[in-house]
Image 1: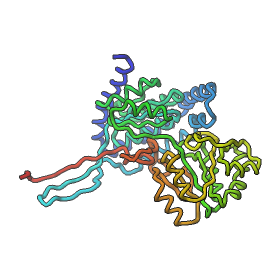
Image 2: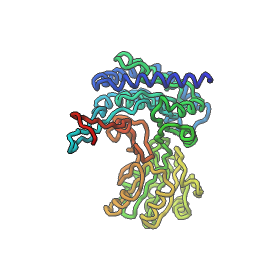
Image 3: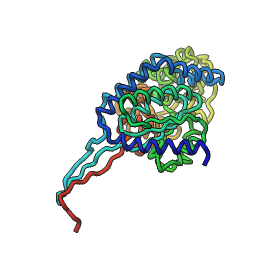
Image 4: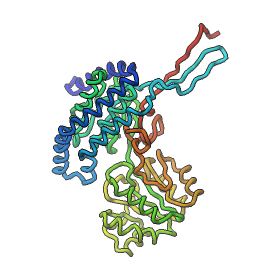
Length: 424
């Protein structure tokens, strides 16, 4: 057995022991640990920022895109945001032990369906170091032990954040090994985790297509995928154009390197000319490259838009994570929905319209994890949904969909209370 596999197996054994202890912890003790973790994160801000500086320096030298570097970069505000997120999770209702349903059978048996922790959860992620905090915190609140494996581009940041969280948790009496970070970033660590079904109950990968496909190909336990975010906005012929411009600009440019940023805008033919006329100067100022179908290309060319290029087939299914936006002109809402279903990733999609009937048609027929009417897709986020934080945005349908937070990190069991009943 090689050294790395032995190390990962040891992490699994330790996490399994911690999970049993965590499952018995009271809400008060878990919340006390979370508050201590938030305090220690703030106290360790200097060390975390120095570690993050190393990661950003390397990412810059490796010529990663500016949006990718933005995903990676930490500052005092973002560390404060992580700490605030921990406190928000501490203030939320504990789902552990919650009775989902209960009933009594004619023979007197009382049956309860009760939420319980999953056990040991493996989180495999890339780039964003705040995931280290979000994953550890949500797992702690739900009574799950967690094994974290981050990407090479954020390894120094991840280690510094994990050390701060573990120190805070230990000071409040959290079971040892509740939070474990694998300090190796090679893909072999991913494979060893995925094959360790005797210790890990669930794996959640969030990152690029190659990472997720690697996890799925090796996994011997359930996988909930945080898959690509090809998010789409449809500007209907009854849209308020000023509103549409605000939403599309925000959804594309506020943070283009995140999974809930839009990658495609669909525009109804009847309002294409005025819409492009309004939005073109704003997108051009923000240096957004447009990749357009022939009709949209004609409209944008007439406005002397730059940079502009004809869309290729692959542009409709690409998650750019950059200042690139594909544009297509459509004849009706049916065409728009068909495009979303064929080319989208079922992550987050929006219709912008004043027509209630068409809005409801879009909301009902688009089969995505989150669907919007007149609001930016950038709201697909655990904190924005009131969950405090998130493990990721699941594009699966079972057992979690959309922002994965506290309830999605639980399973359930049936508890049956009797008075000596036997089955005849």
